[in-house]
Every structure is written in C-alpha cells, then in structure tokens.
Image (tube, rainbow, N blue to C red; front, side):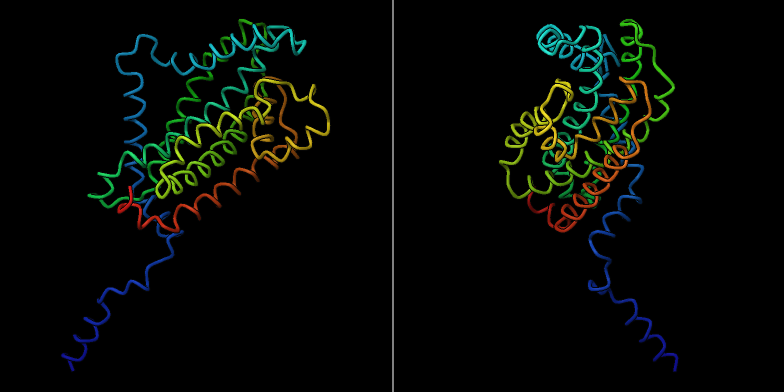
Length: 281
C-alpha cells in the first residue's frame, strides 16, 4: 500500500510542460519575481548617465532645451507665436516625445546587446523594456524641475493642473512600453528593424503636434493626425504643463485607452516567442 502511494507521488512530481501557463501569464509572473533586477537596472542606468558629470541631472534638459532654442528662433515667427509662449509650447511637447523615443529605442537596443546574458542566465526577457521605461520615468521626473524653473523665468507659473500629470505620464509610459516590446520582438528576428525604426521615429515626430500648433493645421489634416495614437497623449501632457488646465475627459480617456491598448498588444506580441529569444539574440 505504501509502495503504491509512493509511486503515485512520483508520478505527480513528474514535470509536464503542457501544464505551464501561457507565455502571456508566465512572462508577467517571472517579471514580478525579478522586480529587484528591474530596480538594479534602473539604478545602474541612472548612475552611469550622471557619474562624473559636471551638469549632473541638468543633462536631462540639455537635449530638449537646445532643440527648443533652435525651434523658437526658427519657427516662432513662422507660427506667429510670441517667442516665450512658443518656447514653452515646444519644450512641453519635446519632454513627452523624448521620453517616448528614448525609452523605446533603449528597450530594443538593451535586449539586443544582452544576448550573452540571457543566453546564460534565466530571467524574463521583458525586464529590459520595463527597465528602460523605469529609467525614462526617473529622467522625466528630474527634467520637470528645470522645466519649472524655465517656465518661471519665461513668466509662466506652474499651476495646480500639474497634479493631473500622473495620468498623461501613465498613458505615455504604457504606450512607450507597448511599442518598446513590439519593436524589441521584431528586432530579434529582423536586425534591420533597429535602423528602420530610427528613421520612422523622425517621420512619427512630424506626424505628432510636437513643434507646430494644432490650431494652425487645416481641419481635414487634424482629422488624420487624430489617428495617431500619440496625439491624445501629447495633447493631455501639454494641457497640464503648458496650458495650465486639467486635461479634457474625452482626450484623457483616449490617451489612457491608447496606452493600455498598445501595452496589451505589445505584451502579447513580445511574449509569444519570448522563450526563443535566448537562441536568436
């Protein structure tokens, strides 16, 4: 009797691969178990970026600030904007755009350059994309300090509307993570995706109202721009920082819907073949 019980236990202990959860669920569960690794990767990225840097966290604003100055000199008269007003308009949009462009590019490149690591160590492959977005959130938080100082210098006092900022930031982070996961999955199988994506980012920027006012765009063109999922995200982000008012409910709903939808789609695309990435990167 005891022998039969022991045999049944041994049979129950046999590993059955068919009983594994779906990759969609398994990758998420693994990501939760490795959450400390995410914090370590974010911490490492921040320290490497600002280590021995003279400007320190000021580097978070150097790129958008220089771009803002150039755009203001070139386009403020073209768009009939007062230079101070246009400067903040462009800078608020550039903060959102740089977050998206930098985090999605970093998510893809970090996965591709970590082939030796994921080939030797068992870890969730999505950890690099999540860490890239986490790093982007820290940099964005740091960049808001000099942005507030610049706004004060230009005569625009930060308003209580900034309390709404977590909502457009959440939509932006979800959308960026979804796109980052998608391009990462594609880059594993198609190496040309990395340079192609950089070209597409340039076109995507001009299809998003980052440097030009939407009010000056013909209505038929605006209808096309609204098909861009980044449109409501950037508009809500700008309404909080630049316009000093809470985002419209419909626009905020569209931004959160775009972010959540892209995140789910990107997660599904990425996790379908996540178990094979170690053999391809």
